[in-house]
Length: 255
Image (cartoon, rainbow, N blue to C red; front, side, top):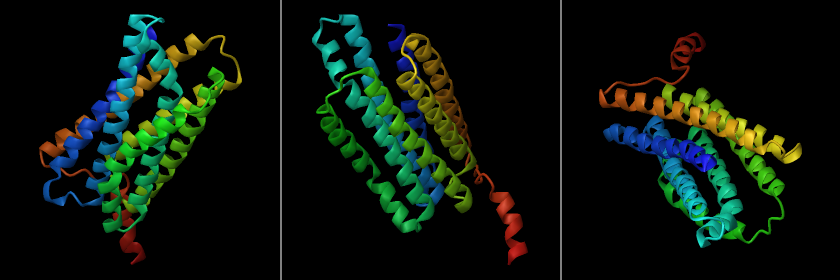
């Protein structure tokens, strides 16, 4: 049961981060089509869907464990474990891809991508879950290695998107930092899953304990950054892009 509690502690803040991101976006008011505002909108769509998916999975897992191994719910959760975990990874990779498009495309095209993101992510969650449920999983190593692969894709995509955001001044400092923390979390996940998949499962319990506590700490850091941004937004204060001031100093020199 301890593992299920740790899972909940690591997934609930992702959902909370999505809620805070939505509140921040709403505080933008009439300038919601600004790229920085759209970044919060896209983040809200992704983390509300992924956070809900992950939290629901954790809750069902805890309930199934409480009912016992002979319960139908325990069996159902086990049957969907591979599909649920890999689907969440695919959704996160898609989020990274859409964030990259938002950072490098024209504002009008970026706005269209953000507007379509809730439907795209929700549709992907349903289709991917059903499709992956048909995959025959023969061992825990298959699950771990698959999670490692999709998480690595997410981390790489997010790194590129964050770099593009620096170049375009497309995200404010606090969202950029929150997504950088998220990217660190995904990178850490790749490391843990790869170690367990390719080395040994003997100490899996210890691995998971460390993994969930680190993931929880990073997820709550994201919540703290989003809460601070909401506080500033409520006060009507603007937050600059990470290197906006540096860019402003350099531009006249090249003009």
